[in-house]
Length: 103
Image 1 (cartoon, rainbow, N blue to C red):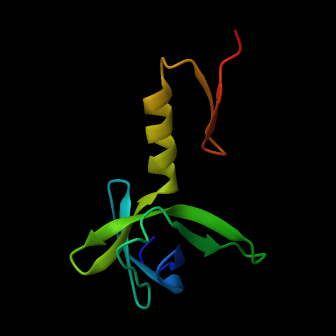
Image 2 (image 1 turned 120 degrees about the vertical axis):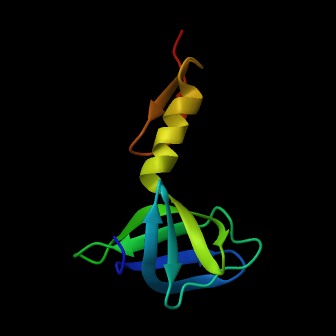
């Protein structure tokens, strides 16, 4: 949701936090303090639950204009499912993990 607090951890930039700027079709942009550099792709983007635990919101992907952008965790899970349909993999959507099917 626009305005929601959000953080990103990049291997190059470390942790930075700000807010969600805009949401569009499985992607969202961030601003107000979130920074990114080349090499940060794939890093976790997260927010905090009421009890202080981190909750994955997405994976950092690139920039859209000058704003850091991430693919939502929901869109990532959907892509994993689509990529594995018919592959024989057993997919755990909650954990976004896959294991070989038992024969």
